[in-house]
Length: 212
Image (spheres, rainbow, N blue to C red):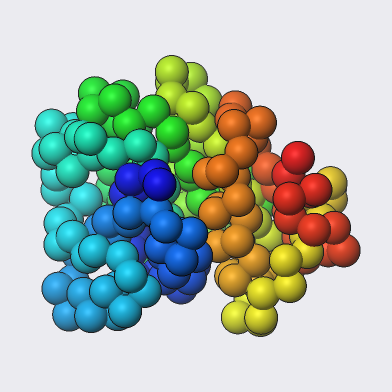
């Protein structure tokens, strides 16, 4: 049994991941900002923890992480406001990495996106802030002493889980949120994924083989 903190615990991927992990026997704490989301999280078997990662400093985050084995970052500002995108997707994410190191929670899985890191998006484009924020977070994670894995799923859909992906694709297509959750659960069980960025689409290869 692993003790896992999942940040962004009410997201569509996160809720499915929580159920997979608790069904596996792991102890999951899901960090959410809105207390109204607690019942949804609890229904997965995870324990809701109400905290605002945007305002918590490194010490505050470390308190959440102390005594835990792994951190999964599945949070995001949701786009729209560049300042908040940088505050959450870059600054809070990087603070969480420092906090994980401070707390001794060495395993860290980042749910990113297929194209990251990408510094080519023009400043005039609405995607610029998100691309830059995710690039900064992913690049920083790779410099830490954490046992990190970065997941780069392609465009997300609400399709059913297939258990099949393509982790060798050179271009982004589509993948279901359910399969993203399954990949995140799988990499937590496999030390061979440490230090790797895994980009993937829906495909024909069983997840365990694709990430192996």
